[in-house]
Image 1 (spheres, chains in turn yellow, purple):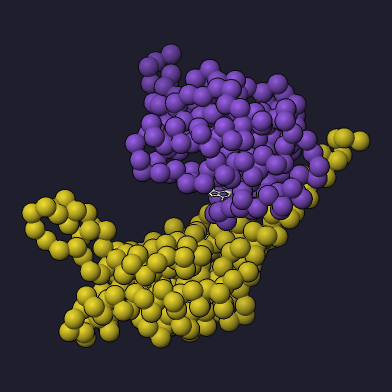
Image 2 (cartoon, rainbow over the protein chains, first blue to last red):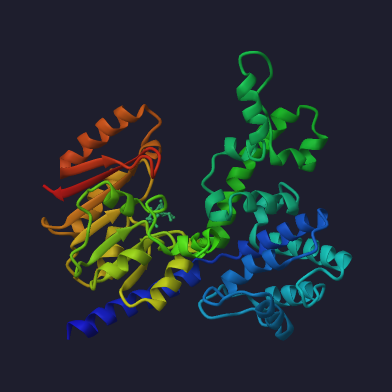
Length: 228
Length: 190
Ligand SMILES: C[S@@+](CC[C@H](N)C(=O)[O-])C[C@H]1O[C@@H](n2cnc3c(N)ncnc32)[C@H](O)[C@@H]1O
């Protein structure tokens, strides 16, 4: 009697957690993926196994992800697994198309094609899931911000001051060390690369304004497109 | 046997319950009364990937209710739960006492353990303590620098004042050198 009820309690908890976990995987995974792929391509990294493994571990959370496993799924155009994130038709088509640029060792065989696909799909995904952020900065920077925090559900809570400086940690610590002697605190981090800042005369002021707008845009996107 | 073959492999090291990787184990090594009798139901808050739970689960026939809120950690915990027979994974915030209550199915909890570095560690623990009876053994692994950036003595003093509002502190010890700036408390509900 007690034995079965113990088993039932465990089973119910496993089932419930499995369903809830499935809903907790967010589509920003795909945005992070195409962003990091672009970085890999910039540094001429050939092997995409690690990258794809990150993505496949939310598509097939309960499977062991090997090169063969990935190659087989890519070959079948299969991007849906037990308890994993649910991509729509469009998103699956993106992955199928992108993966055409890989060989059976999960290395790039067509750098140019892969880069073009990653760029194009990052733009499309940004439009779809981050319409407010996309109005303010380039798709790659949107992706960098999200990937820096490991997901939009970490990013949306951050204050503007953090968004302004993120990616400038090195400069910040250098400043801290020399504080007494010389130097000014860094005014901008990652977002410094944004077009609007590059064009601005007073870059510090512009960075502050942009960070303020971004912190609002991120919250809007999160609550409109991601909130469960 | 040559020197070389005697050396433990990395795999072996990972399988052993290691005080440097587990606060529970280091509390045990510190001679705190955190050992198991063998039939306890445990509510474990901050389960992470289940590295401590993978050892604890062999020491009890009861259920380990394992609460974790990070999806990435939870996936690993789920895999462990699926291949074990006494882990009930709960994907929830440890502050969500209502949800956790539902998931316990009225089981009596014998040990409540919390290992969640956060400024509100004590509040989280006293809220969760609603779910257990007076005779429940309560363990807290406190990460001093996560509570506040004051000097450690002040943090401990304030923490203990707060703890005493809800609990009796029966034992306590620093977890150095296994875990830097960590303190462990064995508590009972008042
Ligand atoms: C220090 S680790 C726990 C390590 C684990 N006890 C072990 O020994 O194997 C803390 C864990 O608590 C989780 N966590 C943080 N805040 C939480 C919350 N509010 N509710 C539940 N889990 C939380 C973190 O994701 C992390 O996995």
